[in-house]
Length: 343
Image (cartoon, one colour):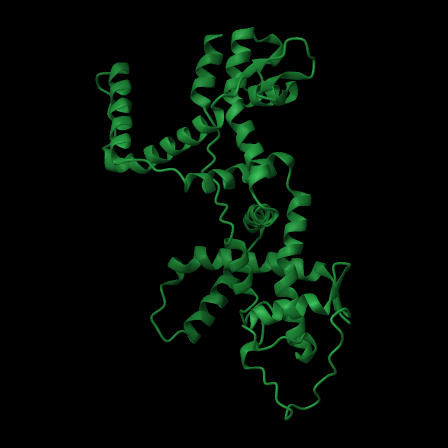
């Protein structure tokens, strides 16, 4: 069982800070894209919309309860879009019916594409992916409340050096400044986990065929335990073949992730969860979307033509342009599938 001990010791807690899951990133990105002039229909400048009687053919305003559109099968009431429009224009315009059809459609896209995106993301992401990104988002949020002093970082660095030199007199440890940020993140993670684990009992359940044990009151299934062992030992070890001491060690390793997942589920708002799912799903779609060199060159030429300042070289901008174009393609595909119909 020495091999399993080494594997468990090396595995530690999942690297929960690795996944970018900023709650506002997707909203800001989509909002910006819906204002661009190239690929996606833009929102006309709502702030300059006149309200005087001189306007030609001003349409009649409907009641707040009127259905003004159908979006992905959902009836959109005028009250809902009027409220968003008022906020969007800082009170300058508050009646959806007074907008031209082009602006009405653009406004509906701005409101509902993020919601449709969240719906698609929740449907297509696996349970493991959903739990993983939520845990990552919760850890990033919790990390903002943790303070690590320079003394703690130096002390941790000295322990790292001592362990390395104990294993080999020739061991080389990078200078503190090169790994300071990594050490700080590890200390933050340790503090969060220590707080979660305080007073929590981890115990093996020997009498059950389905439950491997409990973290406090939270059950860990045999399936979950075997899934972890599959990853750590490439399928060479299974739960029912482990001795009791190693079973306890495995559950102790899984315990923090179980508690983090529970905290994420309870503490994050539904809006935060939807944004996290959407961000992760969008990242996956962008990676799978093809963007040709021709498309990149065409976008670069447009930027150069419009810009009054010096533009970086095509080589420098290619990664950014590729990601931008891919993201636009994904959003455009969502718009086509959304079935937005004005009433």
